[in-house]
Length: 538
Image (cartoon, rainbow, N blue to C red; front, side, top):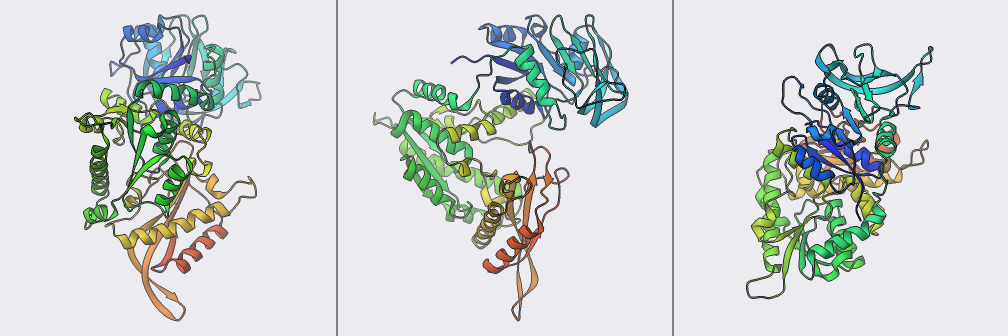
């Protein structure tokens, strides 16, 4: 099926992905591409008639200091265009307006007055002033501002510090806002983007995961044909959904390799096998490599060094197993494809790093490298999807909701949640303590919402601290280890607040861990937000 789409041009903002997620939440397909694509590329992209609008992202740069411009074709195709922050400033500059450094910078919450009843903002407001002006509660992040409108534009929004906080050329359907509608702090942000994408662009909302399965299955069958596929199954959401989708498409022609590095959660390996072998009847090879991993990690304390060892070993073990499964020179049947659970944020971030438009936050092992080393073709059935879409797809494929909606778990597993050196003793203690914490989060329900505290937190886990403290149990003195509980709430994982868990829940968790996990005598709770802290401990 051919989907109508929105093109997002990325000028290097750290929140460009959020624009794409909001568009997808309107059930409209969109793609992010670097801003330095050519006009010819844009025209070719639009040639099939499915492109219905273009969004220009923000940036950390100033338009008068860099050469980053939207391709001229953006403004020549006759399509609606929405500029956000830097996107507004480059639109103004390229169409004959003026941008200057502001005397007053705006970072954070602002209240914007809407003007002129434009198509974009008509009826969208958070409150009215005594004078009857419609106001929006928004998030600003800029030092520069438009000081002169291009010809044909009118003011659409303003703040005291930024008289042109939004502009519109209704005849050409060009709109621009200085604030960020993609972040949750802009209360009506989703409504604004929906208005642009669905109403002004007139895009068909047909991007729905339940319907997407048939489309994805057909694409996999076409790509793979009668050949065979190997997939590295980690037990995480992405690889699990990829495995379920590929298995739906090609059945026994898929072989999954599950590498158990000894740093998984309690009983996680058995759960993976039960799901994929017991229920989906997929072919899974389980490799117990825990001794190998723990041996290589001995004496290593530095977090990045641990990540590299675990990541490198995982690849080595997987390559060794894959080599046994791939088609050989002797003409025997074997795998010719390597499947990976690459998802769209991995693709965007890797692309942004290549184009040097975005600051690289972390590298992604799923993008590039391994297929070439193994001499296999690459199959990435999730590379167009965001994480929330992957979860939606997983449920639609019949995977258990509790598996698909589990909190994020790092690739190196407990290796990065054990501070300092990783030892089997520490991993065993942490596994049990973490399982108790997660179990009680499921057990405690918030009266106000009717939801469990597991559902109310975005990520929760236990951290092992390599320190001992004195305790008292019975009549005796103990000298045992300390664990920290971590639970955060966030909408986008770029910022996060620590979760204000009920004292009764914390009391229950602490009591159970200390009583049930011999070797731990003290439990702490982390009350740090991101920033300045990170969500994970390392």
